[in-house]
Image (cartoon, rainbow, N blue to C red; front, side, top):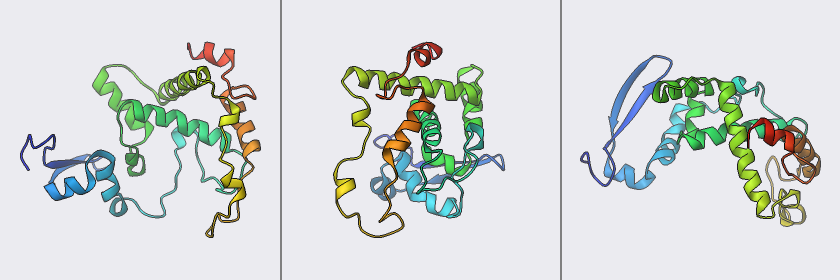
Length: 202
């Protein structure tokens, strides 16, 4: 695979943040066609890179323990924080699979500093992510979206969902939404309050 073969360089750059080393690995046209690139490459390699017992926590943004997947309490805060940081990862084109490889928000703040010359903290990133998410929400509100649309389809409540760990479990959606709106600073109709918009300078 040549250096200008339809956009592929023919190599993957591996960076070990802990060991502070790097290396390149050649890829074949077959691998590129099978996984196409970016997050596809990451998905192909993730099983051998990340242990199955890796805990989904992110202390830098206040997610310090694994949540009970069937529980309702605390999910509003968990979801809003995750949405804020994901808005940043999306904005800078950062592969989310790298989170499982210890590429934390702290690293992202440093990388942004080195590439833009602008000082960033994790708090800056979270505020920026909150601003992005609320701006998108306001666009959707302008299109007629509100709390009635923040719900699961009827079939999730009425049709049999099969077996497995969550086969008989349906969390209290209304309770979780209420908590989520409070965490977001939104009205009961799911619309960002004036104070939130002013704080975020939207």
